[in-house]
Amino acid sequence: ELVDRVVRESGLYGMYKAQAVASGSDSDAERLDNLDELVSSAREFENEYDPANDPANFAEAVGATGETPAPQEPTTPALLSLLRAYLESISLVADADTVDPSQGSVTLMTLHAAKGLEFHAVAMIGLEEGVLPHARAVTSGSDDDMEEERRLCFVGITRAMRRLLITSSKYRTMRGIPERTIPSRFLSEFGQEHVLFSDQADAFADLQDTEWGRDTGQYDTSRGGRGGVPRGLDSPAAPPSVGTKIAKGLPVGAMVRHPQFGLGKVLTVTGGVNARATIQFKDVGVKTLVLEYARLTRV
View (cartoon, rainbow, N blue to C red):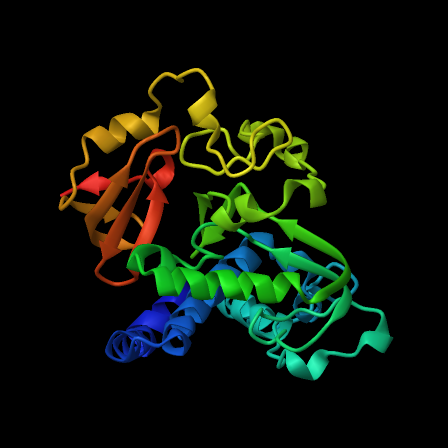
């Protein structure tokens, strides 16, 4: 919350947003994405932070031997301790500067930074709608934008010389809020005979949904379905979901409020088991939300 407030109240987010709107360039829009990721990173660190395991707090916890405790300096406020620990845990390193295949370690980089490089094994993380292809390409409706995202996906695939691992998660945390995801449409374009699928959903059995293509809004890339065909087209009709009921009461143009993103206007609404809405928020731009989990309130 502190990082989010600093980013917004300092005017940093507003400045980058104005630049992105004025220029329309991907680089300016990516700066906004980086700020969102910074907020998500800080929130995740806060959830996992344990003051008892912070070495900086050990000195404050030490007392003198005997019955009378030794005088101690005032302890560091909890919020400042948390902020200090977070800042100490992060470092910014240029992707290209860390590439050293001889070290035998994992190298993290963006798809743009990977151009021109090759590796024996490559892992592409997060092939989901809104990530790859990026949300801007999805909402723009431009064939050129989508084709550019497809080329970027191809860049990542062709970096692998021997093995390629591609993952798609069921949920992703955006600005500290878990959101349901939809597998990337590019997954349905892979030659099925060249792909070995591995469903890791058992590790999260409580989430119930164990197939990529369970609803009509998702692309079916499982072994049992036809590649690139939504499962709902050849499966018995399912009863209306909670999201579908919400969608019926949420017309295009309606004003809504989200607990994290604030006030927004509904641009599009789609039905299905994972009914979702694309909303133009005043402060954070366009977001696509799964209605069952979005906690929207009409205003």
